Image (tube, rainbow, N blue to C red):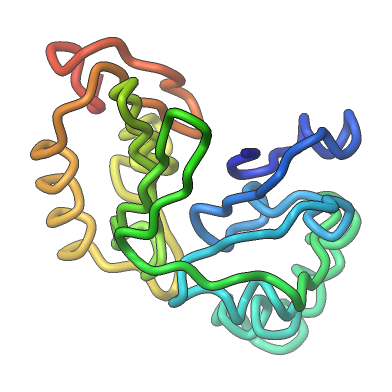
Length: 182
């Protein structure tokens, strides 16, 4: 399973994976998804934006000319394209990984559809962009909600995990004593 293809993945080429999971439809999580042969899974609230580049742009909330410019940047800098065959998953969806499971945990706020994955029995909780780094603690877009983000932080605190992994600056954090807030 490949989670949140990044620029590094885009530069190296399509890795071998049976499935791709996208935590939310921001360009840095969608790099070159059209080049990945595996099925792409994304939360049901965001699947339309992954299936259609035009829907992704419309969701930016930018005026028409700025949206066109942003679209050019998405295509050239991040290699984002439509993935019309993307599959919708709901909160609680479980991916079976041969002795492990990865369960989708919906953590809205950063975006309405932002999700994480809890990998068991290892106790690894990938919280994606809930990393409370210098980018935040709260950053988002036109569909973001501070109230939802605060509820998602509470939800993260309720998950017992051995490790917490973030997409951006924090990386992997060992144990609850370190906390996602670091």
